[in-house]
Image (cartoon, rainbow, N blue to C red; front, side):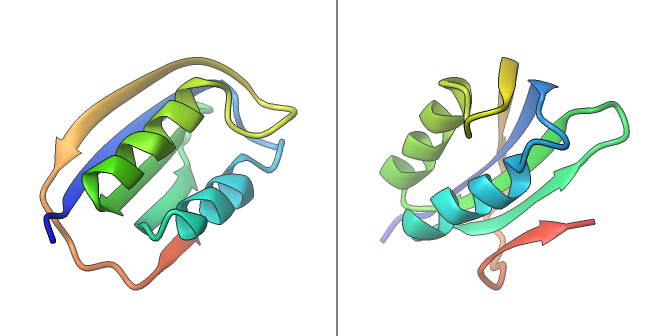
Length: 92
């Protein structure tokens, strides 16, 4: 079972619209671990680890706009080292 980890930085109207909560719900449904957190510049950082196909599915969901109410302008994705997170959390 190969695992990959990515960090995605999501820009646009992504804070104050339930973005982290909906991302947590989607990631958990895909069996991913990691976290989502707001950054000071108004973006959201999403770190996700799991099966490559599931991680790619989450990235595509982020790029397609994420939850209703959000307006995603761009998503930057970079690989991360594999880390053993406990579930998928929201960080503050």
